[in-house]
Amino acid sequence: MAPASAHVYAALHNRATLVPLAVTVGVLTGLGAVVFRWLVVFFTRAFTGYTDYSALGRVPSAHWPALGWWFLLAAPAIAGAVYGPLVHRFAPEARGHGVPEVMYAVARNNGRITPQVTVVKAVASALCIGGGGSVGREGPIVQIGSATGSALGQLLRLDTDRIRLLVACGAAGGISATFNAPLAGVFFALELILRDFAAESAGVVLLSSVAAAVVGRTLMGDHPFLSLPGFTVHHPVEYVAYAALGVGAGVVGTLFSRVLYWIEDACDWLWRGPQWARPAVGGIALGALLIALPQMYGVGYPVLQNAIDGRYAVAMLLLLMVGKIVATSLTIGIGGSGGVFAPTLFIGAMAGSAFGVAAHQLYPSLAIAAGACGLIGMGALLGGATGAPITAVVTIFELTGQYAIILPLMTAVAMAAGTARLLGRHTIYTAKLWRRGIDLDTAAAPPEQTRASATRHRSHTPQPADHLPTPPRGMTDTKRIAAQRLMS
Image (cartoon, rainbow, N blue to C red; front, side, top):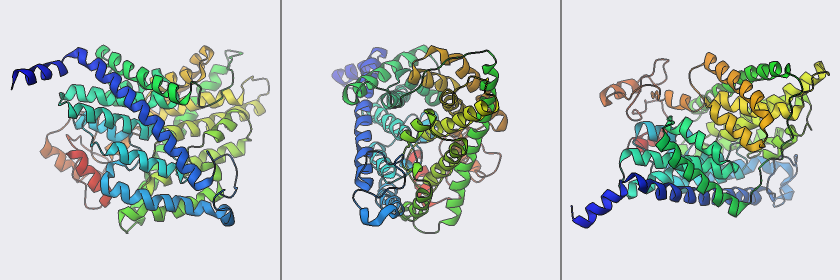
């Protein structure tokens, strides 16, 4: 190696070099988050004529008024006809909610993610959400940021540990820029992506998260994505109610995870055509659901805001909760691209608000507001479904900025996480990998053992894998291509 090259190589592998690299990843991820949110708004306006359709009711599209509300049947199919072939041809791993693929890349693939995921995931997820897909923005932005960090590390030929760290920096930046919550981004990356709270990792990830937040605030403004009510604990007996809410959230979170993969399995079993056409044809079924429940269109933050504000009765809240579980699962099942982080918050808000309204009706003396229970429900269901209780507590605390919520929130999140763990050892993220024969809680197995485990990936005794196993014969073409891409 030439002296100049050796000097550059040594500089890139110096620990101090991680600081500017982490900041660079944070800035790029922040910019990516801004562009992605603009794309979501652009495609939503293109299909509906509105910035967000979910809370408008069953109104016609401003662009297709002659169709009436029947445009809801066409929008997901048209969007699927565009992003289906795009994902199938260029980046099959961009299908789905994205975070499990990032977790796998860090734990089993040395942090390597194919660079084209950055663009394909952004366009496909924005089309999916804009066309009515009932998924979130956070998962795609996490995958986009992680792919950016991985691409930079591979370009500079960094070692495996540093590439993994840059992937986590991208994930932290994605959450930070999306929610304007830098601390939530840090804990998300440490608790879910790196699964490590080492001081060196935390410091670098923190810098990236701050950089992404600064970019997001500069370009999108420094304001919360929700207008949240004040929170007060009036009597210690309320902690019992919050603990009960946590148990219920743990049950609902587990149900969401299982329904998600049940519907995905059903779609795999029913579909016999080419995989690139699956989102378009499946979009008709999603459109029929949107006609019945238009509040499921897109991310649905305005509907979540209405629930927190106490504008829905218990029956409507429960209907919206069940509707979101089914709509998100169907969107992912037909081959859509989008996250489950925001749907988890949505479902938690509906469950928590329903609990608060019912508790107040049954026990009028219990001074618990529906909006307060909605906030607690958001955190509890997030902690139970994702298996990341610290991230859940920090996220809701940072969104509200109210210290009074900490103790009730910790109580509910702890109960939810414990309940979910009793009902099953896999989270909504790790279940996707486990179904492919990968267990992140155990050490990687030798390749020959990995290949043997692949034949039993649908059984109840999956084995860990050093790379994604060769998909079994029954797996769809898209999943097969995605697995092979991730193995490279």
